[in-house]
Structures are given as C-alpha cells and as structure tokens.
Length: 319
Image (cartoon, rainbow, N blue to C red; front, side):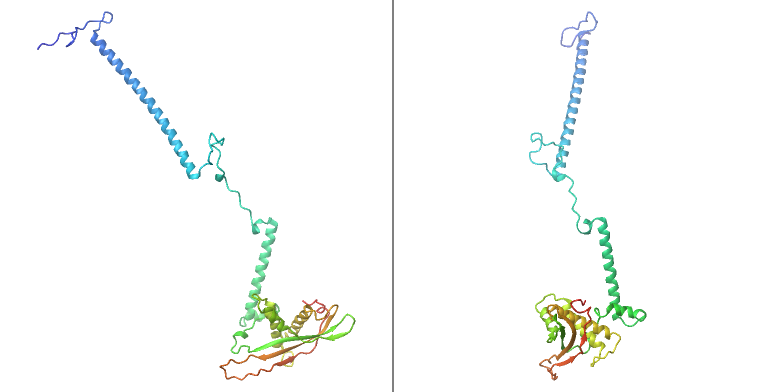
C-alpha cells in the first residue's frame, strides 16, 4: 500500500494552504487545538487554585469555630440565649468566669496594724509568763540542785501558797481521813454591839457546790483544802510555828475564811468581821467489809485560837 500524498489527510480532503499565512489547514487546526488546550489548562488551573483557596478559607474558619466552641465548653457555657439575637455581646465574659471577690479577713488579720502589734505583744507576754510558771513549778518539785540552792527563795515566793505541789495521793499511806474546816466570827454591828456567829461548815459548802457540777472550779475543789494543808504542815498540834512559812500560811487561811464569811453575809448589813476562829473536824474513812482493821468512827476536833482581822481584810476588802 502506498503512503497518502503529501498535503492530503489520510481519510479527508486534501489540505490547502491559507492565502495569508501560507499554512495548511492541518497546521491551523493543530495550533487552534493547542491554544484551546492551553487556555483550558490555564482556566482549569485557575479554577483549581480558587477552589483550593476557598476550601482553605472554609477549613480555617471551621477550625477557628471549632476551637472557640471547645474553649467555651471547657470554661463553661455562656448563658442561654446569649448571642446576636439576645443582645448579649459575644465578647462579654460570663459572670462565673470573672475573678472571684476576695474573702473578708477574720481574726487577728482583720485588725489594723496597730492592734495587730498589740495582740502580738500580749501573746508574747502570756507565753513568757506561762514558760516562767512552768519552770518555777518544775524547779520546786525537782530534787535539790544548784539552781534551787541559789534561787530557792525566789522559787518559793512564786509557788507558795497558791501553786504548792504535794504527792500525798501517791504516798505509801494515802490520806484515809475526811477533814472539814469550820469557822465562826465575832461581828461588830452597825449600832456598835458585837455578837458571835455559829460555826459555818465551809467544806460542806464546797461539797454542795461540786455535787452535780460537771465542771467544778479549782477554787471549789482545792482552795480551802490546800490552805488547811499549808497551815497544818507549818504548825504542830499545839499550833506552834515549825517553819519559816508559818506566818504566811496563817495569813492565807485567815483571808480565805474571811472572804467566805463576807460572801455568805455573816456580818449582816453594815456589820464588820473583827475576829475569826477556825476548827477542823476529822473523821476516819471506814474500813472496807473484807478488812479486819478496826477504825474509830468518832470525830476529833482541832480548835485554833482567835485571830484578829485587820481592817484591810474586813468589810469585803480581803483579796
């Protein structure tokens, strides 16, 4: 088979030259086709680029919206209805996200600096007094040492008579007696006459104050008892002094009984206590049923002499 003639298409009319350009129709067709293809590619590339840009913008907006919604969900949702239609600005922070109000100060922190300094100084003074008291009591009950030998007088003046310590409860032979303290007084009345009262059982008064009281005071439990122990320990059975603290023990016991008489109204209206006399009534604690010990149940009395009451201690001025 022979090849088709030059300038002729294989199955079409012969190619003719263009009068102006001198190119054949086949070349023009090819050129038009190439131009159209290039324009199509350019348009397609442009459309693809615009589509990509639009898609990128939409993706960015969607991602930004998702991030905002996630942040809102973590921090807490906005009030219902907030948005464009509700008139609430979307930039306005919800109330529960605002900074919490500071808590009001209480206690010492609520005081002004001047009063804070005063409170700190008061606490420091109390702490020093407590430490000194504990140290004094410890040295009082501790065995004899260099400090107690050097400063024994100062320690005794601090401890006696209010803070005296003893170990009678833990002695080999603990107390097995009930001791009641009684007192009577000579009263000078408002009209100048005098009278003597009957015996007041001060221990029984303390007992009635303690019975049924869940938190009895130290005064009700121990003041009178310790005062009598202090006196009996510094005097013999004939009421003679046997130690350097005998005068102090007598003054201490006298002032306690005068205070009790004044509080009980023993002197009456405008009356004054001139003298007091103290006695004790001692009874033995009965032996238990299984014991063979024979203990006397008869009370014994110890009567002290009359003591004159100074004017400073009479009339309710005793302290």
